[in-house]
Length: 324
Length: 290
Image 1: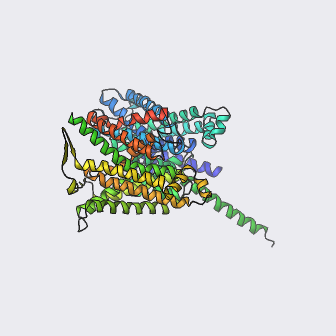
Image 2: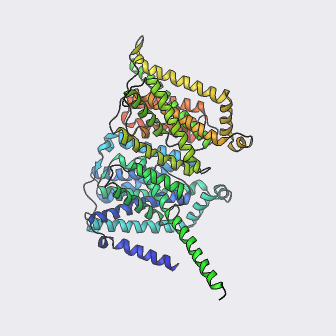
Image 3: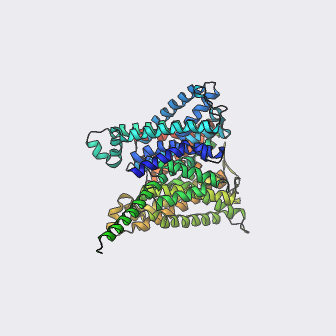
């Protein structure tokens, strides 16, 4: 346990001091990206990891929140109102999305969410009078909570870090709550949970809403970070990227999404310096992780570590047992 | 008046293309219980292969129909390899298989972009089918009629294959109950490969046949895959009749939507799906909820 605590403490210190040990603003910005994508992945992980529902349309929900912010700002609303509007619109979209997709589970859920995500993308792409089509919408300013400007990279990073910490805490509380336990129950034994008197559909619905809240929050951070939103953000590729974050980090773990997000964002920004498109690599990593390390990097490494540790202990025990 | 008639013909043509695409999708789904997310990519790959063969980029220009057959065979072989060497690694893990098909779809999309570039490629209409047929007020492009006829012929051929041959009986047995089919000695794993190759070939064939109408461009895969999904959600999985009816319905909604409400055309597709999901989750002709 203590090793874990030390690792966590080191991680927290590392996250807090990012602007001091990274060589420049570019890296602070990469760290901000990792954090808000990690919030997105946390949101998807609630469904994929804890509810056993793989959603392939989450980029659509992410994009709806981002579009809501830009549209609200464009129509002259202030930042606080725009953020509230985005959260409300995001949750409303999620409610609709959940009501449709929860008609099915398993493969059916994947199909419906994929179709819904593509429809949202199609709307963003073709409904030009609202979304400005492929040209997207610019967001000219960042909010200034309590007079604290978010224009500098460091200020934005720390804001994202605070939101991320809140999101992790919220997920931790959720998972340990009776609702979280019931959700895991519906994932493993839906029929038994039903027989025990739980309302399986309602439990899944609230899990979707929680996931939708985190997704909307990350979408808002995203649009303030890039100050631009276009349909590309809502494409199937983005849904697959965030799913890759969840799976590679380890679905159903608390910190897996952060690690998966770091992996994807870093690989993407490093690779984009050398090749123009990274879809091919994304696909290859995706296939490789699904086939070779289906449980994800964190549980996979933990498993390997435990295996080695046990072997070492056994060796030591064998040595001490041998008579002199 | 002729505007509406032409729109109707276009809708049926597009429905025919969708049927070629979604019949394979539906069969693969019925047998393997997975939505094959590479299906849009296979459609696009077929279209690009066909365009290359027809356009004479390989030094010689093939006849359109020979090119279509060659492209379909190539993509069918690719589908068989995909099934044998990737999906077979994950027997029974449907979720993982779906994710693998998703990953492969990105690889194929990027491969196409690298090989053929970002500009749309137009596929020339075969010479014999250039021009129009006149029926009083209605002027119909010959090629579109040909596509409709091809779709009907393929539909009948598939129906005969499934209902009247030994292979078809084995496929139906596999769709209904794979475990029982294994017990009575059907090599279900080979059926998987055959059906996957057949579906891939049909998708590629649809891609090249659709070439003169839709042209070929990056992102074609992402335009077609959701349509196939909606058709199958609408018609029901594993049902040939379902894909046929679903394709025609979606063909009409899509074309009329694009003509009347171009900004919301994609969104209107959502309505029949919504109704079906609410009132008949297994699809119009499906037997089980996926």
